[in-house]
Amino acid sequence: MTVQNKQTATLTNVAASATSVVLFAAKSSATARTVYNDSTDTLYVKFGATASTTSFTVQMASETYFEFPQPLYGGLVHGIWSGTNGAARVTEW
Image (cartoon, rainbow, N blue to C red; front, side, top):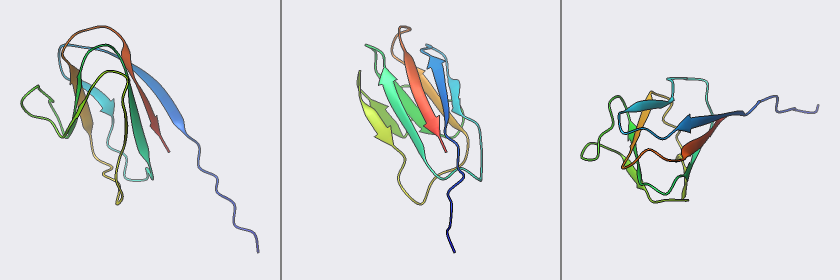
């Protein structure tokens, strides 16, 4: 018997913002999540709602990559930047 993996990756660009924005909606069926900070500004990622520069889970410098650890956190993820240029390139599958 052959087992086939039928997962489909969802790629989204989230514009940099000086106010907290959703990077990932809650999705219990997600198996992996990644973020690339394609900005010259620092991105603060929070596992939960309302990220800030003092309330965050991961601080990402410009042009850095973050892969969510396993077991995967499938809840809501917010982000906020120290400026407003660029975007987060987020992928979920």
